Length: 409
Image (cartoon, rainbow, N blue to C red; front, side, top):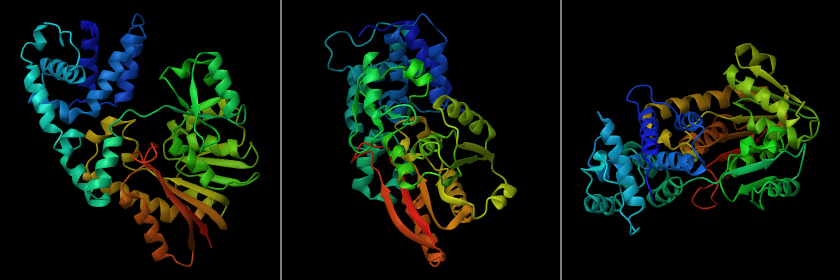
């Protein structure tokens, strides 16, 4: 392993922006902007910056522990030391010199760092790098053994999963087309439209992506739209659509027949969805900004209703590892109130005899199953639970999702 100073410096700057004491930035956006900033970097250079940054963000508490540093008032040199310590851990079995003799690395003691690393393996919240409160909450809701399994799985790099856009292609045809441009994939048997990349690559640059032949969508997320049991010609509302990945999937399942109403409280997300709609060749999606009048005007109008509600995102932190350091107990408490408000108020848009799917990408039952249990207790004459499912990063390798399908009586 030969280190190049400009690449380490770029990684230092990435980490500093992600962990700004005030107004920290999202890791994926910082890394994307950094990689675009220097066109002379090759793929190995870009991979070093992205992978090193993500690994340290994912293992931030562990990295601080092995270097005896506090996250308060970190200096530029401290960030260099954190990167150096992580490279020592990652490459401890290599025979060559672990680090170059740079001034920023002078105070690093490899034997001490590795000893601390071994100590940390006995302390889950440090080993898996989670805040004290989150470790306690996860154990309280899932039990010690289950929480340990899930948080370990969520601390690994997530696979890249594609969803073939069946308005333009099929799983097998897409696999053949990708193979022609040297992008190898494997089939995911449980999902008829899913392919897993064997090697990470910048697939958004391909003509296949630009022409809407596929979207990037985790396997668990791909289970949600089929769970709604849509039929051709139906009127379907996706009430928390965001940038619309599930709306696009619903449109494809409906073969552009019927109508999908994609709603959100943020206009910029709906604007992004409209770009994706055009690329995907979808013509049965309309967008609506949510307000009280919108909900009233759509009362009793939907054959199917999807509520993919805002949540902590604990089920997808392997994709967004910096979320661990930005969440707070108070934020999750507020989310639970928002989730119940959406479930109890938005469900009025569904016709009697229609089906509703409530979904979250959280591991916590308090954000998921608990809301459905409350709904069934408070409104037993209005709802029937048809089926529910949980996906597990530890058990099946998917992101951590919960989904429940209910019939409106």
